[in-house]
Image 1 (cartoon, helix red, strand yellow):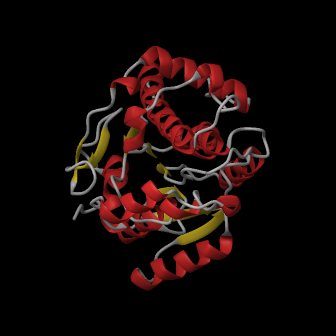
Image 2: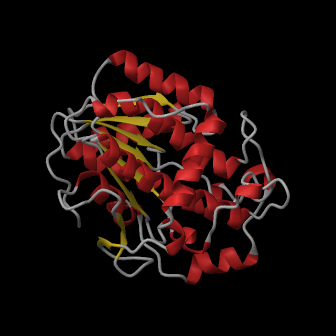
Length: 303
């Protein structure tokens, strides 16, 4: 099991921290001494996670703040609250997401739900929190992608899947977008001389409610093939699945633009993972970043 290094004195934000890999990451960071903000859409579920974490690590600092990544107003309010606190942010773990939504749904801002929740929301959150991150001595942004991104491409002509919608294609595109965001942020840090390390991870096939919550939205249900794969493909629990993200966020061996996942693709201890060719095109990454700035109305600070 990956041992999280000493995090005493650090402030960490973990999105989607009420369950699955997010809750496990928050628990392990708390156990290593970090003060952790559970950024969750439903505070009642966050409270349950907080009680569980405090039971495992009494006396530690864990707080809940509401964040809906599908709503840019919620992202703004969350970031503004943290900024008003005035404390530098050491770690941002972009973990939350939604998967394989059966029918096309739009966010309050008019984005396709998976693109909005998995990419544009985390993008907006990261950009808004950059001033706090850059106030920390060695900040990190760790972004969770997915192995499904390996067979995706960014369709700039139909980024919002308005012409045709496929649950799996839209999900895969959103997670490839996360990879490209992670890599371009690493490039920006190098260009600007920021002390920020941006790295990425994928959880392999980890058993969490991500597998069922998206496919059942609005009365949907997982397809026969999906249901069969859930039963026969090798899988692992959140304890193991969270480790690549924790490695990206805390390991002294993690590198800018590094990408980490299970040793045997679906399961296993963390190792360096090769990025798919589609994630290595810096021209596409820069174009996508520019498009995200246009869609969200946000851009990186000039510093």
